[in-house]
Figure 1 (cartoon, rainbow, N blue to C red):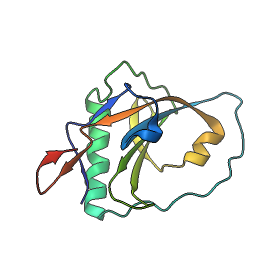
Figure 2 (cartoon, helix red, strand yellow):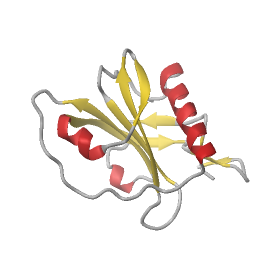
Figure 3 (cartoon, rainbow, N blue to C red):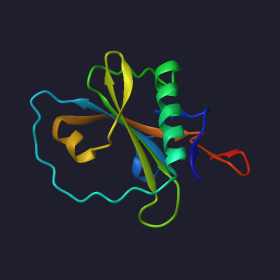
Length: 141
């Protein structure tokens, strides 16, 4: 099982997300950008529907009710946010959650990196600290 920690913090301290176990990406609309991105998506890591729903609700709460970012991130209308966690081993070991900023709050959105790249640029990236809770040991990773 993989559950998000209520102590989760989105840090802007690292921008090389390729070397991070857990990371976030903020996408911002790029005026006039309309490119076609072609590629293959990897199937997401499978977690239980209960854990998935728990994670989505908690992430929305943290993003909208608290300052989840360590630095002044000021989202604007139509920003997209991807929060990605490494949860297993092997090629399909990532769970990602997507959010869209609308009407001054984050709302759940389907993670569509190719679609987002067609109209958005990557604005900021960073590390997710205190990302997950190991349920058996109650330790944060």
